[in-house]
Image (tube, rainbow, N blue to C red):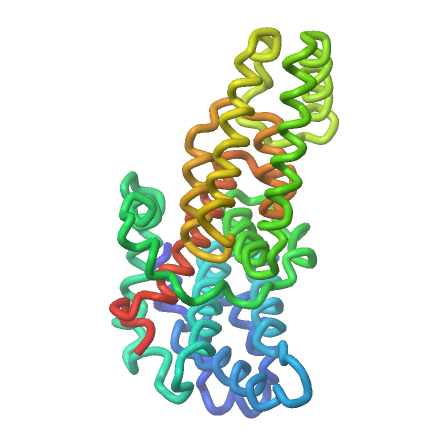
Length: 326
């Protein structure tokens, strides 16, 4: 299916198309029907160049506007591959703004060769030990992510466009990058640590408080359809298991806050590690959703996939050997 889709992609660099369509219309077509990597990258790069030229009048947002349009139409078309393509190419193009020269080409002239590496990474996403998981095991990669996340996309507008697992991962990755870029993740970590430590203090003093907390969580799972992996374990609340789990979670958050400013791959590694150790979380998952700005549809698996895709975007934007940036 993916190979057939790649062969049917539109070329937005077509002169006739450029004569009759605005950039916004081309972004919508790219999102709704699919377009080649090179032509989308060129469309986005032209928008970024216009933003740079207009900087004297204030920060430009033409690039973000185009990607918001393209992503909205890809999500409405229920197209995982195109929405993921748009997010990755947006990150790559936005990262060029931090280079010393803006004139070098974004992609090689051959779209097929230039796109091989990130499309190979896409194929590996569902395989154990794929690119995303491997990057978190390789400590050497963590210190080389110097470029910041791209300017935030309008994920609030896109939030209700899908419930598909794959598309939730793409939307979640865009939101994770937004939370890193605008500083909200860093602010919310401190609030989350305070909240969980307050619960621990009350929970250590009263079994009744822990049972009431379990009952409230069960009600929330039913009423709000919170995306828990499993129902909250009653015995974990009666015993000290819930307390020990939350103490460990608070320590993980404090450790993450101590080693990162929440704007690099290091924070994604920390969150990925936290999510990997969750079995039947309730409050912990809610706080993780809150920190990243994700809604209650995001289970641990959804959070993990979102973080992995966000890490892929950052990794590709920094890696000069990926044949996407020259």
